[in-house]
Image 1 (cartoon, rainbow, N blue to C red):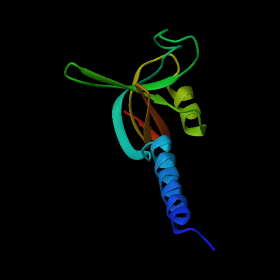
Image 2: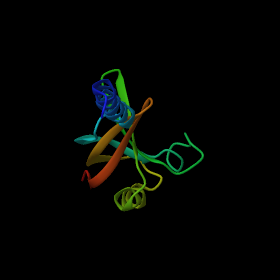
Image 3: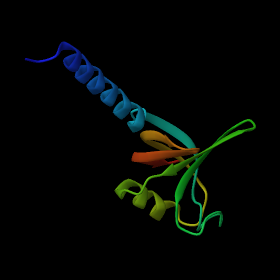
Length: 112
């Protein structure tokens, strides 16, 4: 028949495998809204060699740079901002990838 020790070892292995998968996947993205200065880090400030839309939020001496993930909303954002730096509010889901803040934009508004 079946060995009870084998059954226990199998269950423990499955539980550890599921826990490892959760840890590797990282935390779930969270929905946020940020307001700051929107710009292209290539076209507007020459900080990068590729077009990359960013929102810079400054609070006192603290500065956070949110990099917009490529999608239809960020493409439209880039067209509206161009080479300028404009006040914007962006809503989307946030994920931290290493030291970078990646924001998948779902909508944005330009300040008037």
